[in-house]
Image (tube, rainbow, N blue to C red; front, top):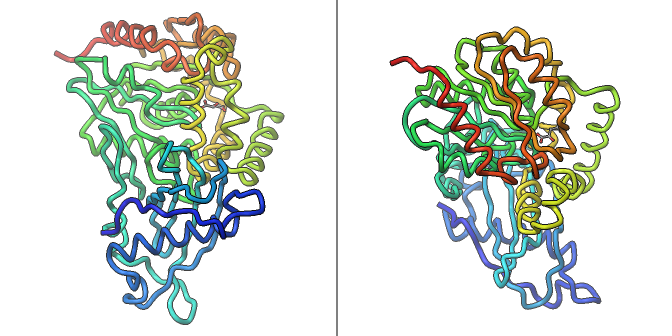
Length: 404
Ligand code: MLT
């Protein structure tokens, strides 16, 4: 098995006239790190032993911060997608001294034989790369051809916590830790967090199928759905496909209607930004609207956490989610059909992305739903007002009747 990390030193001859690590050297260091990990693991001839060679089909390198001679960079790599003849690696370079993220690279390889024809990826590749460390309480569960990273805690009736874009399951840290008496299931969606990020194959239907398959694997028949923003769009899709499996619905900082024509154009512009500037470009563009203005001004640590989460999203996952959101159907007509389903709508009073009037419209259209507007919160209420959100969820769950 290849080591998960390798440290390389930046030399003066790799730097430009001002002393910064230059672009060509950066690419060489990423490449060097990949081969070094193979050399220290299964051997540098891992591919040639099997009569094939991995050729780069696509690469995207993001330069996050300058680096200087003498810096020691820690390179890590993870296998973010495994296809039949192709695979995707994501590499990161962090400065050892201060853990600053210096650069990331995402590379799609196709395995070819000596004639240049595509051949299957070596069977041993996942094992060779399998030491991708999963942080915290996460486990890896294979569904629909991808590995999802999932945090599962507690026993009892289940609540599925679905994050938004371009985020990960950690937005639910507080309710995950606190909602005793319930099985809390918080996955990273495909393309985000620590889940696989295939090159193609994103839609609301695919996300919903992934999550229904995940519930099947966990042996969970019925759930309370709780989705934030894009997580809400996915909840609507689950309701369309499997209403009978849902025992309650919590819509957090989301909207039911589809994108307008202008909204779709903005999605295409955002995709262009990501192709040009990587996930960091979208993270910088979105950050000012993610938190309530007061929280953004007074809580730089939270802003930084949200920025890092967004900027760490694989490009394939960001592009996939943008397309899936652009093409999602109008879910407003679903709402009046949900009579009898306990429902709660939560929004922050300074949500600039899915404002209060959208939440109110959903609560009005959902028979019997309760609306809760949380003061001092923006688009990420579970991170901005975690206790308030967990208390609302606990109260809502306590009101759900469960079979004896
Ligand atoms: C999200 O937070 O999931 C997104 O902002 C939703 C959207 O862009 O429609």
